Image (cartoon, rainbow, N blue to C red; front, side, top):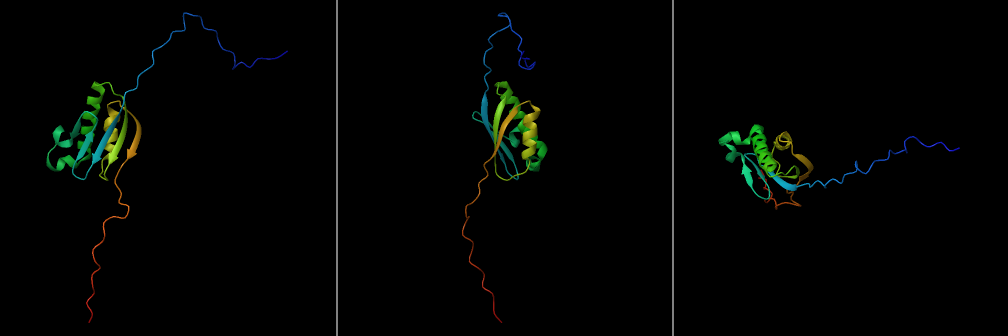
Length: 136
């Protein structure tokens, strides 16, 4: 006599229990965050917002709080348009990248991928001529 594995036994469902559910549509969009030393720009396909447009002026634009507020503002705009999944692309070597990510997560937007597209020179510009030393 063969003993059946208890993990392979499946309960039979009645026809009433089986209901075809509609596939959930995932609206995915690209969000490009350009973090410079003085400002933070976040742009999507439809709009672009900087820290100055949120209400920060002068040196306050280069703070992590300002970057966080811009990200939250963008998160609200995306949630209004029922976009919950995003791909984040960072440009430049500015600080406050984590602040941007925290602001987006705070508005319950799921980040699928974080990409770094900072431009690197392959060999850069030609350096200036070497300085001649004065002989004595």
